[in-house]
Length: 376
Image (tube, rainbow, N blue to C red; front, side):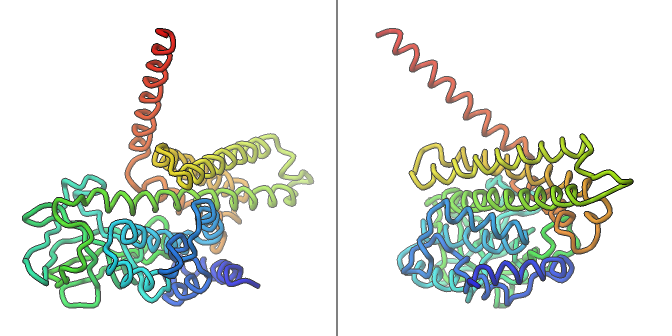
């Protein structure tokens, strides 16, 4: 049995319990042992140099078993991607091996009570100068914040926006675990408060004037991509469970699968899942080929995959009936998790606006090209 197979079996056995207790810290080491943490980082930093398709398929395998484990894969990758893309040589050497090796758990602390993806509303402040700064503010909904050893914090200074790595094992950092939320209950989500917490200036990733938006965009793009693939894993698992139950379940001497309405639900789910998977593969290709459309195809993939997971899990719960709502059933757990995946990054309309703008730009470019061709 491979390390990945062992990890997936362990997650399958524990996911239901983690929904109540939270995923244990030892799973971080297990994920690192399986080569899942920062797998797309270079080998010199402990990664595997995996391409986008391999990374996505790993997210789908994890997502089919446990959203919280996939969330660890995602958030660890987000922080590592930001450091690898924008950090100094010294920062990469210090932080990346510890993140890919599971010695440190990372977190992304961007969201605030009145500031989500809108960076202009961030109130967290970095103060001081010289070798040490202080950070004060409150961040919400930090995935694995309750376990995080270091968090990439978005804030502001007198000179402009800042992104920096803040270690949590010091005075002035307070963790407030979040429990009983709708979904992702095993992902050790926490609110973090920074009360003049100390931070070495060498931990700054985005200096004032450098571009906080670039650093966070790198992290969020990585997260969006792996969430998309993770959602296809969820959706595929729900479709598999629903189809198996419909095939075997007999009610009043009639097989459940013989009901036209059940077949229709399974058919709709199959189309949704297949379409989302195709978009994820397209996004992977664009990312590996460094196509200019990579960002928008990733947005499209995440949008379609989250919708597929939500629809497939809802239909699965309906087909499974009481069994789908029973404790320990993954379709019921995924039903809640899928709703969170649709909420992340704001309302679905935000993605629809981005996609609509891309369609209009593409149409405009196509008309301009046709006009030029006709003029010749």
